[in-house]
Image 1 (tube, rainbow, N blue to C red):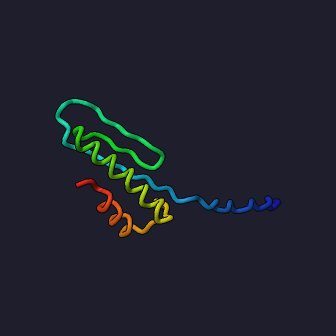
Image 2 (cartoon, rainbow, N blue to C red):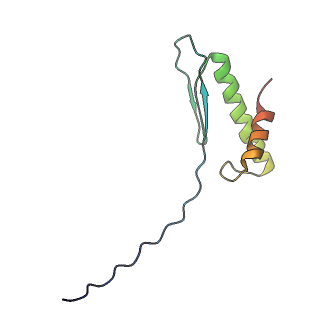
Image 3 (cartoon, one colour):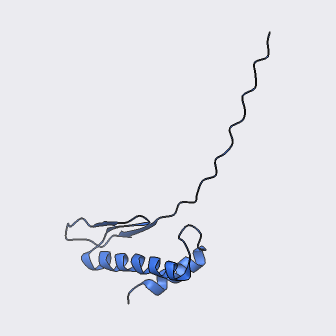
Amino acid sequence: MKNSPRRPTPKAVPTKPVAHLLGLGLDNDDGHKRLTRAEKFTVVGGSEGTHGRMTETVIKTFEELKHRGKHLETVQPEELTEIIHKSTPS
């Protein structure tokens, strides 16, 4: 019996980390479906006020990340938490 040639072991292709922020509002009672999407975030549901506040928060979060020269994929969770809290409208 002949030995068949060995197939090379497939090498893992390095992948870029993927990150996405998701805001989920649960206080909607007017029946309106709200959805705001962008490349790196999605805001779903909520009352008009909650949805607007979540959207403003993520937009300001990305502005602050850019100001700091950081990317969502590489920022440390603790720093991201601090930025989100700072970016949340009062």
